[in-house]
Length: 100
Image 1: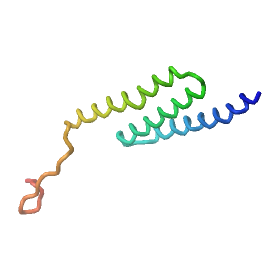
Image 2 (image 1 turned 120 degrees about the vertical axis):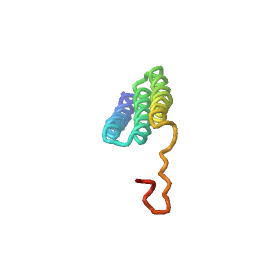
Image 3 (image 1 turned 135 degrees about the vertical axis):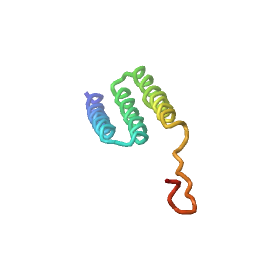
Image 4 (image 1 turned 90 degrees about the vertical axis):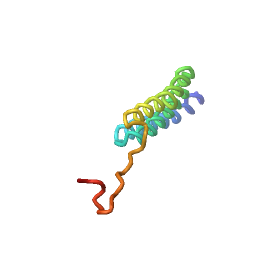
C-alpha cells in the first residue's frame, strides 16, 4: 500500500503540469514562442508517460515533441519568410525612407 501512496501525489503533480502546459500552449500567440512552449509541454507529457510506466511511449514522445516537431515548424516558418530576416528600407537624403 505504501507504493500506491507514493505514486498518487506524483501523478497528481504531473497531471497538473500537463494541464497547465496545455493552457500555456493555447494562450501563446507568437508562433516562435508557441514552439518553445509546445516543446516544454511535450516534456511534461514525457514525464506523465514515465510516471504512468509507459517508457516506450515516453521515448517516442520525447523525440517527436521536443526535436522533430519544432524543427519542422521552424523550417516551415523560415521557408515562408524567405529564409532571411526582414530588412528595413534604406532612407534617402529626404528622410522619406525610399517612398515616392
